Length: 437
Image 1: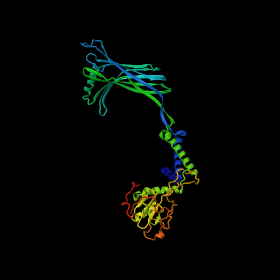
Image 2: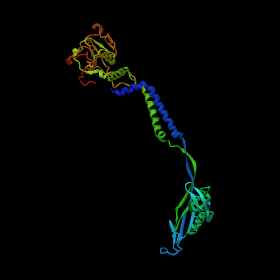
Image 3: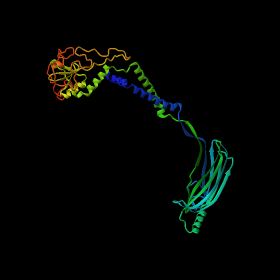
Image 4: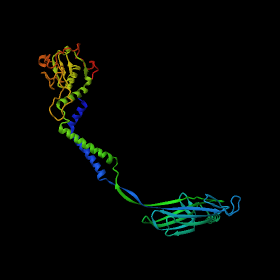
């Protein structure tokens, strides 16, 4: 008999209603989440790009050498440099070119205007103390194709510009700010892109820095401004781990488990009879009171006293504790004893249930046959005196026990090992002959 299997059956038999309810709740939860994930999933809103286009712009600049020098011949064009020499090439020339990129565009127009801006600014507070602007160039185009561009040009005499700034500072008498110089180009683009009419206004700057005999250009390089139009799109949400994986598992476990419990209950598959319950109760008592039990093979003459039988191992242990006696388990007789000067108190454990028991509820032989050395027990006291923890220690032998009753297995056994055992000692004084359980 597999004790673990029997305990599982006993647990299911005692709690089948609760287990069935739990499995049904698990199946219900799994079905609910599976329904939400596959049949009626929630929707999540995302954005989808319905049109996309961009404005592309780029600066170019150069300076032509106009003064004699030993390095650059007169007429040499210095282009796209970071630093130019104001003494030999004072005039900065440049251009601003703008176009657009789109997969579907029509009726596109671009207007541009380039302006030179000189201003004095407090960098911390962004306060503008003075500002002077000069329009350099403007350009426009209508019906422009994606491969077309609009260009504005400029030409700045840096020597004259430096003198003009000095004149302004001299006129106002003070300049607490920082000088900022840049070419500013504004772009207005309008057209139909991917079927939608769009308008955009952009501003580009080319910073300049005058430093005595040189001037610097801070070219930002190729510039792209992208424009997208999006629309909300609703789509079923991802079921995720709970709805996509755990929900079907919960549904399957709940249905199979519930069906198994119901079928087992109906067919008696999990039924546990009284003999099996008695055996499990004994096994629980044996484990609980292990420290009070000593395994000793008793000689026959140790049992030649009036005998009383306990209803359970717990009763026998309680009696032993109350009377400062020890509990002896005789492995050969499969019986537990408490031996006193006058009596022998015994408990015979129930037989191990037969593992081949029919599970359809029919009445078959449930217990293994007992050997000649194993007395039969019907679970009640067979002597006239019922022994429990409250049994008094005095009384007549004739009233309390049946001495030498071979039928009850309490007489001396032939062939048993000889020796003497003192049954009055506590469990602490008993020594285990075989390692004790």
